[in-house]
Image 1 (cartoon, rainbow, N blue to C red):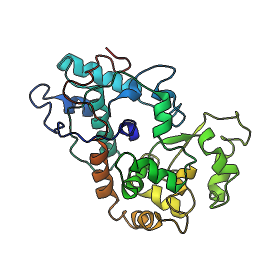
Image 2: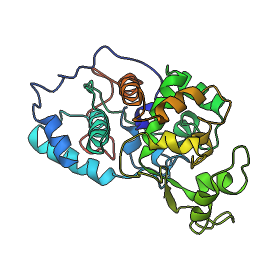
Image 3: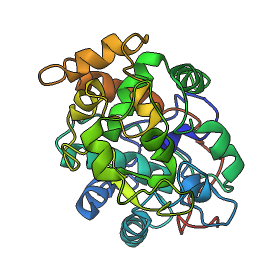
Image 4: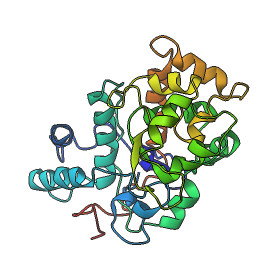
Length: 284
């Protein structure tokens, strides 16, 4: 869901939830039925797919290919790959029990992709709270936005190489003993052994969009160091994390929805900038 986080912050007034009403009226239904500047979709050895936080963890590109193919049949050269990503992110959250929101549309696709830019823009899984807050701040997002958007980790997985340090070397706070024991067979302590083995970011309800991600943090079950930084027993994000973890997650869905709308306007190309890709994996 952080796919729109890659580009420089620029909120555009040219986006509209009704952008395709006349040019491709069935666009949203096609995306939903199949199941940002979209630069993460571009193939290439030096592209964003191979950035450290993304490598072997970003999935679903084939689904995007299928959606794009169906849209090209219905209304050729109209719907951008960037808009497909934005709508698919919303639809995925809804399908897993999360909130819905109106997606502003009209993005154009970028023509280049940069592994270096993604490595620079995306917070590392070893980031402390200060680094996380700063990374989001450079995109115009607050710490409150960051904590809410981190709730997307209620679904998805992380590679062993990204949580090995948390599993074996971290003591403040250390990973829950029971969870750690269950992870060790798939993530040995030796570098290079099991690096690409994935484990769920939320071991409690891996396929439900809920507030168990935050509940897990209160029990020191944050898989990544950067996850557990949202609750350390004295950090500035502790109160917000505790509120989200309570009951049904006081305010989490509302705050997540608002932050997703806000993030959806970051770094977009509109008008005559960029292009509408015919194939999401390569520029025209």
